[in-house]
Image 1 (tube, rainbow, N blue to C red):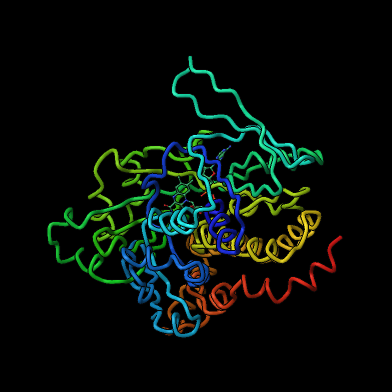
Image 2: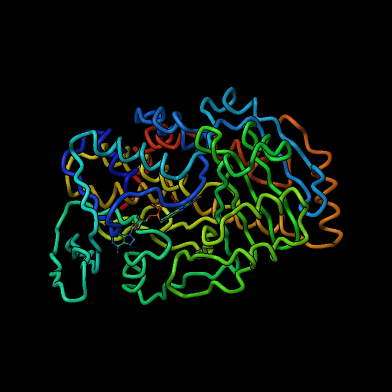
Length: 427
Ligand SMILES: Cc1cc2nc3c(=O)[nH]c(=O)nc-3n(C[C@H](O)[C@H](O)[C@H](O)COP(=O)(O)OP(=O)(O)OC[C@H]3O[C@@H](n4cnc5c(N)ncnc54)[C@H](O)[C@@H]3O)c2cc1C
């Protein structure tokens, strides 16, 4: 998302020679539901690609938080104020729809070349170079890495970023990816599977997001793909899926059902619909805030420098905000010897906001996962008295102040306004 977004943003600002090196052999429908929050839809709209996601998106009309065990609604927020107040819609889509927007914005520009099936192996920040090798189709095949030199490198290689490890290695720091102790199941239920069940159909027909919470766990769910699919995403203690290097694995349906065995019958009915073999489990990883995102003319982008737990729905949004700001700052400079300073301005603009989003998402998970305690009683009382049309809310994803902070700022406009002042300050 950060890589395609950066290509899209730079193409939009008139850059001419942009290359994306991606290890995947193809751009498939990988993943499940993802939120296009207003701060993200603002940027997609500027690049003229939001309509692509809208074709299959669901525009959320509101969100509810429910007690997982009893199905009792703790709070409901009506989102009618969102588009009005923040000027851009709150959509939910399959991740592939967001990918389609960015692919189209990048590739239709005619100035971006996408090199699929290529793994970046090494970095030389002093010469702004990296080595990249085509993925081998068999062990016998030879793949000779080539070194590529460029004016600027934007390393958007995700939460397990090798570029970040190499950058930190230069100053002797250890690149410790944090084990958050949490994992997530991603589940997609097709409308045809519910057999017109009157209890489940409203989940598909509506445009509402549901978050069922319990001790150390929650499930967030909403319809996607033009109301034909109901997407459920969980967070729960990571018990089994701890393979250090794997990203995602086929989870066990029995284990998933056991994890949510004390949740209400309606939720268990939904979980039961998942065909065996279709349960995907992801390990949720994090990273402490980095001291720097920039070395020379190379900058980290997205999860590589601020992996964000999903509890605030900001992973993709913050990556694309990075991309939007990069487009602005790099288009402001007039010579190549100013690239490093422009990237430092990018870091100055983005790091405080992204680090705050990371911390807020983590704190939100803690608050949502409370077990029996006075703190939980106070939280539930606060849920019950929360304003239905936006206001203070214990779920920070639907708290008006947090939303205003996130959705109320167009980071590209902000970068336009603050560039000169910050550029003068960075060495
Ligand atoms: C396959 C996948 C599916 C996801 N599905 C969901 C989802 O359904 N819902 C959700 O909320 N979030 C999902 N996420 C997470 C979310 O998309 C990201 O957190 C967010 O968009 C941040 O984007 P990013 O570009 O920083 O990182 P990522 O989206 O993780 O992208 C990093 C990219 O870098 C590539 N890469 C990594 N190392 C190398 C290398 N050495 N050489 C070349 N390429 C490399 C990876 O293949 C990947 O395409 C998914 C992430 C991935 C990778």
